[in-house]
Length: 435
Image 1 (tube, rainbow, N blue to C red):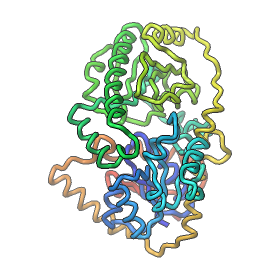
Image 2: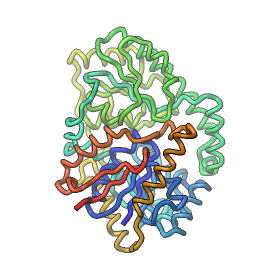
Image 3: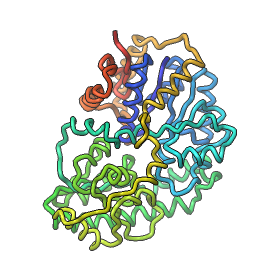
Image 4: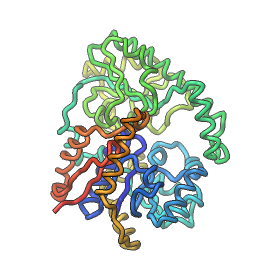
């Protein structure tokens, strides 16, 4: 069975997709992972199971799903953007529909909150929803702490700012509005006013954080790491880079950066939620009522509403004089099923893949020699024509980092030692069982 794991944002999805890939390959699946979408839609690959990052019912996405169905693929989905931190259930209309669900075999959910929202809205598709959890949460569990301890990091003991806003220029915002309209978000309840308010508040919160970082850089000896949103441009942070002790870095996964942080500061960010759940001293800085960010992400953090209050908390934490209450994570457990479940999310997902592969048999496999040849020609052509490779979300795999993560994760299961990872393209890897 072929298993396809498309990646949109490398820093967000790489670790979790790698876990799924290794588990699937250890059970005999031939796994392909990376920038796959354009090649799947152009018949480069034989049919198999595809794990979509969403099934948003936009015209273009519905056409994609229809193509996969026509070509005899098995469609599954785990939404990477909603289901965990949302304050209400509006997302079930914005990100799903009966049409997109009819074209999908299984939908994996983050937890009870996500599962119940979807089941209550789309009752006739109840059997398609699986309470699995997202494997991103598997890395927050105690049994995967070894993964971060085995890695070597350049920086340690710093204050981490985790941002979840993008500072769109007017031109970029106009393009965003066109996308929202063409994708049907307006008809599904995501209003123009909401988009404008989010952009306005993103610039406001950035200004407040810039003031905080400027003052903090003169008050602390600790290095300050600023982590922009994956789709935000590094050029927006030039002034912060000029401050003492401040580094603005986008490379790597947010979970890696949280591991060695002394303090994490955020405002409604999923990175802040992760830090607080993993037991890091975490401050939610909310200087004004904002449409940006997620209230749930602030729930387990120490709250600060003013610059002075935030600075005081930072000082107490660094002086080891601050004792925060132990978080009651009951509400979080209902949001993230696999944080405490006996079976981690990646295994539950692959369990479902196995069931689906038993229902729908495939006789065709990819000819890897032909695939490698086709992709080699394309890489040579791109180099010759000096074409830009990838985009701000994902350009290509870092070979050293990819192989290092692969080798560390082999410690999870003796069966993983029989796996081999091949780079068949700069942005596509294959994992399969050997011997």
